[in-house]
Length: 516
Image (cartoon, rainbow, N blue to C red):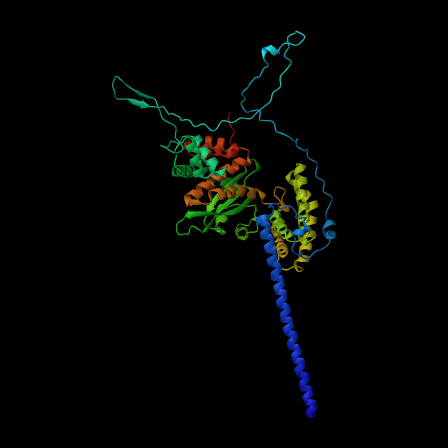
């Protein structure tokens, strides 16, 4: 090969090498740009979602405003033949619309009459005849008298023998909720209901009592709450044993801050767990405080429990299931919430909207079962006939789109979360008594979260445990439409004398009947 040819070949190889280097550099830059675009999209999603959470409506209703979208995720036409083909027409019986306008006042309220009559001089007609009463028109007006405070004087009669002067007898006083305390059962019940039902912190109650002329320091009110928690604890243990004995239960948890906890900083998060369960006519809610969110907590609470457990996607429940052979029942509304968040940052024609509509069909089936008052077996058959085909088609839909959207995006996260939870989400199809969601405990934990916004934290572990006990009884009362004040006033008066389970059982909320 000549010198010129060698030089030409060398120049050609160098050019090819340069081109390869440039192509590699271009590919690298393209990959970086793609990663940056993906990151920007994810950050825009989070920004929009955070803005929506802060400034937008908190409702999980569908977002149909396309102007709110910063960008669109992977879209498909609104029609979904693979889903629609598996779906039958759902008919929900019409309900009677409630009459609009002012509701009548309860008939059981005491009434005080004020009678108005025209003057005697106006009871004569212009023709000279006397007017005859032909009826009356009654208008009801609601009035209220602020709470009245009164003192109960416990008078114990004494008797002595004047003959020998050796015998003295005195009438015994019934056991009191808090011995040697000025607080009667009604006052204690009032303090508990105000704090744990109406979310009034003790310092506000202190101020309210001062306006009534009663000076009770906050420390005293706190002491009463702790003592009541100890006194009522056997009832919550009884409720827990009945939850463990039944085969359908519900679980959830929320954070709580305890300031004075040995070995832990005040800023450390602790947890309030809530369990629900028991036969329908004896359904109960039990709250339990724990510094931990580990799997040992539900293991202890659900010791010897066998059956179905409604829960969210928290991995602790998976450990519980493996150790106790439970069947976990997932929450479709938790899944829906993931897609609702994705829908808030996408157009109404996006995948999130489609998923929401699919889950809506499952919800309509549950409404149909409720409207028709179906038995558990009827609900099981209805779900098998209508819900199961929709769910099977939905899984195919999820698997199809799982690889078409970024895993870290909101829609990608929603799809993968749903697929990861799939065995649990199928759980409610196994028994007509099971529910499509974990809303029972969601509703039970919400009053605790509302109260936490007012009293912010528990001062001690004892205070957190007392709160758990009292929340348990009040929320069980609410489930059974029992007035919490009437119930607690009755129980606090009766429970000091109840020393056996046989005597405690009638004091549970679902056995209580108010006496007029």
